[in-house]
Image (tube, rainbow over all chains, first blue to last red; front, side):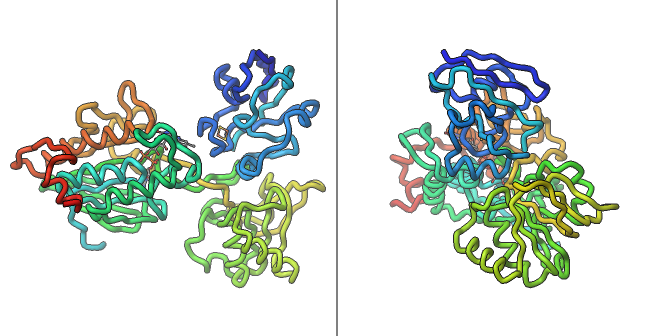
Length: 106
Length: 341
Ligand SMILES: Cc1cc2nc3c(=O)[nH]c(=O)nc-3n(C[C@H](O)[C@H](O)[C@H](O)COP(=O)(O)OP(=O)(O)OC[C@H]3O[C@@H](n4cnc5c(N)ncnc54)[C@H](O)[C@@H]3O)c2cc1C
Ligand code: FES
């Protein structure tokens, strides 16, 4: 199990034991984190699972693939650390990961 | 008002489930007209994930969204379904003779024995970008599609987005508008490279302005836009404009069907599980749009629903004919209809 934290827009912090190979979005939905909608169920087709990766983790998480970058065009207030949480797979080296939920999804 | 098109069944929505319904109904000699707001068949499969693989279509270990649609089109071709694209189904009423009338937003009328709602997640409509207060400008200064080019003549136009619609309209409206500014989050585009090159060439000639950034707010009064606030890499700037065209993709809304008086269950149409009939006899709902206990929004469930719905529609359309159950493998009459005998 890898520990990750998802911080809702109102600063409520959800500390989650995440299974390696699962996505950050799946963990957010399973724990009913407000502000993650994930309408398309993780197919990188809706941009309603947008998160900001904490600055300290941005490099480790990596940058989006071109398809995800295209979908990010539909998200709201996209920043340099923006990612779609359904495209971030939990793995050992992400133990301690922190992501922040934006004010709203598109 | 146009003369009504007379047919057996009107299918609302040409997604995978609406398409397969043509096949099942066709086996029972029921002729179909399909209406869809998109410009091509396939619903979500074609619009949202044409290139992604689907793994749970029986006997297809893996098939892409678009390939599934192409195969369905091939499968239903023998029944010559008639498609009416780029139209939203708006009105609906029961006629005195027991048939139904369906009306599109273009004013076309269809008369049919039965109406099959295969509207999926609802009709695809342009997504409203999450810019605070944008609704106050919609229809006066902010438009999500170009219905009339004249609306933009001699206007200071702001186009937002990085896909084909944004780029095509930048190129096409440039000769008409007073000025055109294109705003996109990043310097890379999803649009066809050829249009992107053309846009950059126009920018270099000083004909269009391109800014990297995201619209964060709008300025204006009484629905008349005067500027958009755009946050870019070097801070926030105001871009003067009196017309804005945001292209932020499509979302799905139930739309006018919500007002037909059907029993709904959280924006879905309630049906029984024998005939998939709604609370209005003769009106059926299949695929993602319907709800019943245990409903799963899967393509294969929609296909099953289409087969059962057909039995009920056949009884309505041809009450005097006996329903004979037949296999396509062995029935020569079915094979004749399919054009394989
Ligand atoms: C990313 C993604 C992946 C998926 N993966 C799978 C999978 O692996 N397996 C699976 O079984 N399912 C999958 N699905 C679900 C599957 O796509 C849907 O179950 C299926 O598309 C439903 O088909 P449908 O014909 O009922 O509706 P839709 O495909 O939604 O089509 C409905 C059509 O009706 C039109 N329409 C609606 N209202 C109106 C109106 N008033 N006027 C005119 N037209 C109207 C719409 O424009 C649309 O084209 C996936 C969905 C998504 C988004
Ligand atoms: S859940 Fe839809 S893009 Fe991530």
